[in-house]
Length: 491
Image (tube, rainbow, N blue to C red; front, side, top):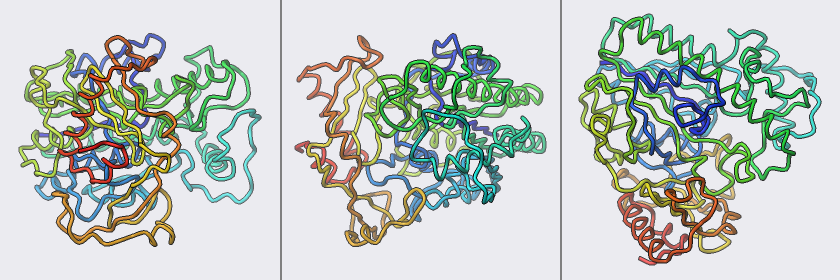
């Protein structure tokens, strides 16, 4: 038995023909839909990048206990377990966050791994002289002196399609398939940073979209309210679409290998993403800075299981990122640890079996959100100070640096905790979270009458029902007690 995971970053569901988009040129995603089961109600869990990847290892929600950070010493890791059972696990990626302080424990859980350099602000090429900045009116101000500068330097080294990090990642994945096609018991994770910003696609894919203007440089929006004029927003959308078409091209190479070697007989195929990305909808750019609307959390997901060989069908059952771990363990006939909160999708693929009543999602210190498939309830923090809020960890690192001395001053050792997934002392740190989201308040949406979430409803009966479902889910996931206080929920 074999498994191939093709994971993209920031891949918008609404930009794929499989979900109704007729503008983006993505024939291989259409081809994928005919080969797999397409999930219509798949949701992210913990955002953004590394919290989602922690769920890909542990099968457990991350955002209630921890923000962006490494795998913990007490964490269960799916690829590490498979490796210990004689199943070769291999990661090939250009996702450079794996190699920063806040992600440095993930890649070593695989038996072998390959890292491709050069995406975004990856500190790759050591050039002292400043690059030549393109003409621009709108630029991500936060990155002007660091990541944006480095990205321009990195791009100079990508002067050929074959040198693009995405091309190298998929070549690495294809090389692994070619080498090991006749072997049994392996898992390959092809993890691609694109179409994450900046939206830097090869010219052949930009040429697919004649609406791209010849205006000033703008392919890297800030995580903020849209301040740019409509033509700039439209241009950035086409830059993103070009990059999706490039992702589609390389996805086709994987499907070609599946066909060439008839891997459909014994190989599970998963195509997924960590979250979406705002491209001007609701007047927002990016992710993390706004409530977790469906543009970010309602994600594309495709699954082929060679045991049932069901293909070219759609499923309505609620599913989430945490379900990937038990699905893969089940496929390899491995016992699913009790700490895993997800459920195997084996029977859902066959007959749309319901595996959960609700799906929970959010970012540490932001809204805590729940959906039952019909309604989405976003529960905001009760007070502007967004307290009490803590992180529980043994790995005191943030995205690109260690915890500060000030953060350590608030730390305490919790020798006894009520977390069943951890039976050793934890360090508890006070943190601020995303306090300004308090101004948005709690929101309730009816996805049946308002799928775009444009008109929140005011229905106390339904809201109370969703609050009860939220409480049940938080209890089930062993949310820290202070989360209930922070959200103003009486239990």
